[in-house]
Length: 414
Ligand SMILES: [Zn+2]
Image (cartoon, rainbow, N blue to C red):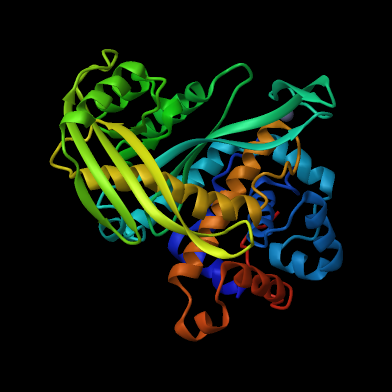
């Protein structure tokens, strides 16, 4: 199975040649960057939880690893940590870019069926871990109260752009927050890079209310991109304007399974004067029933309600239910992308607490996740699919087969 996965990665994405393009500055000939990157990619596709766990598999399967990596020597935990501290993070992003584009050319995202033919991405802040004891020079700090005492907590947070409403939830880009900077500043830096590196990749950016930032939205508009932002009461002018319109305009019903949804669509609004152009607002009122337990522990159906307001620059040729889908599509990121990345792939684990190392591991985990996700979705024959029903089962099978195969997977020569 591992041989099949690696062959697939090389055939479809030319992974081996991409890994060889990584900068080797600061690396020795014996433990070069491609060798170390291959180890991390392989270890993350096996979902190993730490550097020590990688070192342990070297000890337990020394012969197989040597054969796999075509290398007489296997790095120690401290060599791996040093390598992560200096590995070429821009090069890792480039490997991810190549995979993202190849999947698009192969029509693997199925956007025609899932997202109205538009490439949509959500931008969010993601905190990976926190500590009250250890810090590095790029740690963010905050004061928290523990047992009545104020203490400093150190943490790292990243802006992440991930595809939504697509068959494969690829991570498009990751940008660390710098100390003393807000979420929008880091996200803006990332979005500018996305627009420069991939001017035609994404059509719609979906944000939460934190991103109601007119310079960001005006910039996206100038680049011909659509944006959708959740509106909260903090933006008083626009909120009050919509309150007034809700009283005079009638909604229409939207057909959604298991939900009653009413939609309002308001165009050519100008009540937020920091925006260069008039904007559009879509409001949804949603009612549904949910199973819950009453005070006696009996299962009952309870009525639930939610109210959403989105602002957007999407013109009216795109119906309001598109905006409803893209607005709610942000939850897709939580459910499909991040849940699995954090709960099963150790996305939040600090493999080595050093700024370059932390970012590099996020890339290794994301790339390994997408490669095995795509392999699972697209490359398993029907007979195998009966045996392997989840991605977790695929990981188990990879672990078993990797050390049995006695074959060289890599063409690396240290
Ligand atoms: Zn730190």
